[in-house]
Image 1 (cartoon, one colour):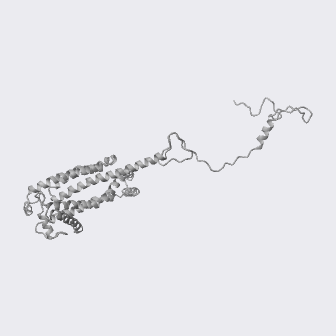
Image 2 (spheres, rainbow, N blue to C red):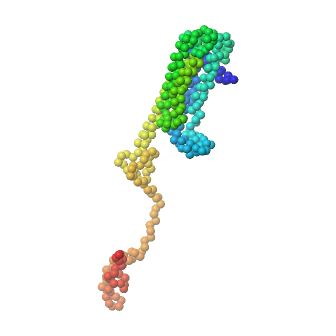
Image 3 (cartoon, one colour):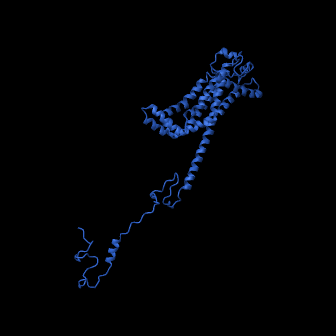
Length: 360
């Protein structure tokens, strides 16, 4: 039913056994153990790029997590609209939630396929997927410190006898692998949790998942080791070792990239910002990301259109000219001297000057 998983897994295992079999011997337990380990490394190397995308996606989701919380509160009673708005926000930021799950989704079928293939290696069996009868017999006869790779602690005594091994020998190999794999699982989860932001850690759902990965999963590996073959314990240990090393490399690489971007942005702002003591020119736009100094007023835009001069009223000029004319001693038209005072209208007394009324 799942042959599309079993055949690729067995093929990769066969290729690595062919390599290490020429070094240690076909029936060597070290050759088979290294074949399982490098099967894991091959798979994880193929998933390296998706893992980097997963880390970047998680970083971006942490950045706009507050916006997601606002959408959840705003559309708490409308699940369909809430999902639409969340998808819209994720597409705007270039985040694909399913992309972050790809490495885990791929590892699960590989784990199932390896478990099934190893359980199929039994004494007296013929071909098993890419392995012929001779390859199966080589695996059955191979021992790692006295234990066969297909045996496990809770295996019935009659089956252990078929592999010509004892339960004590299996325990001496399985228990150390169980403990180391459990500790590696805890530290791998601990390293991931340490990268979370405080807002993400305060989320109740995230807090529950953190507790599961930190404590429940390592205990599950420790308990499950009683039922897992030695080869599966090797798979689990090498998988966690690769994950821990990969996280260290990828996280430090992304940290360096972000630090370089921040330093470049800071240099650009400093280069475009006005020097201390120098006032910005009127009408000059501030540099991107640079705030104007405190108390500085924004320069008003200059109107390029010329202002039309207002027409000059000739009447005030004539009146001013009239006021500046000194009194004349020449006789008026009737022969009498003129008594008009410049600046006064005819018929008004000199005590009442025009425009000098006092306001009470």
